[in-house]
Length: 433
Image (cartoon, rainbow, N blue to C red):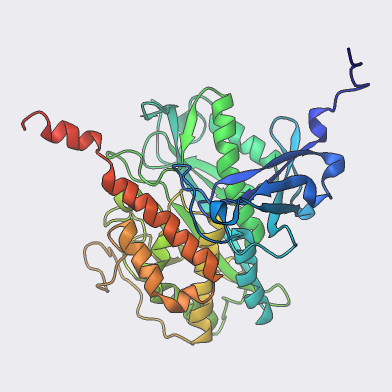
């Protein structure tokens, strides 16, 4: 019988090395801390899977290439404490020969940021993330909140204390939570994450979703960021606040000589967002269910418009000025990939700046009653994918492989939906036919 090792590796000496896929889901490996600088130690099978775990057969990925290795190379600047007494770090992904993987959504966001950097600006982002607290996941049941109130805290938001535990864990993980509160619907809460450089901000948003589920399950409940999980309630948004810092760190969206305090750069940026409104839905609303939320009356960014501190417009310019001047894009839901979504928004804004696009008039009042435009988001996921595929200007900012693989993944998801027989169909028709 072999002798046991002299000591067991303590859990705090393990690092979860993770990276996002194109669906905004986390993958990775757990490695010993002393091996963190050996990228070949986390050699990972290269494959592209949908939510059904089916493989996408596109060369040079998955079975068409024989499931080759790719490498996850740690980004040491992202190392952080993580619940469970361990550490976590983000990674970039590469082919085995060291070439960057075109499907790496973090790299795609960095490439867009680099283009802004070349113009003398650093993109900054911050996220507002909504989710429902669940009593059970199967069946999907909202957590009862008897003392609910809008902007409630404590028992007025969550009688189990889970949200506060989530925020405590997020602070430990340096995810930079600014605040939390309940939303309009009982059991729905919102957490705002601090403004920072866009790649770090997207990392934080991705990790927050993972952390929230982990902590909630430890507390005996669950959460969902699903776009619209309940037909009797509004959906879960993921609003993205954005600005640009110049070389001195000054907010470049400010113009103190403008009557509204907004620079031409900001106006061109907003115009770019509106120009690509339909195609952006493919990243902002990436599931079949997303289009149950992305509709009039949901405060969800349906119309291709913008407004001064107007939450019924897609692009909102909040009232704050000075260093906090920003634009808020309200289309995305909680299922969006923070990295791909932010890359797409920054690319659309960049196109607006490069082309010096003129900004239309602001939306006044209720856009759902009297919109100042007839353009709106596509009505379904398949229509959004068509819009993205047809928007060659926006696609040109992305790695071609990333766009083609993403669209194919989502087209297959749509096809599975088309072939599915739902409970509603059975209940509606089988009782009479």
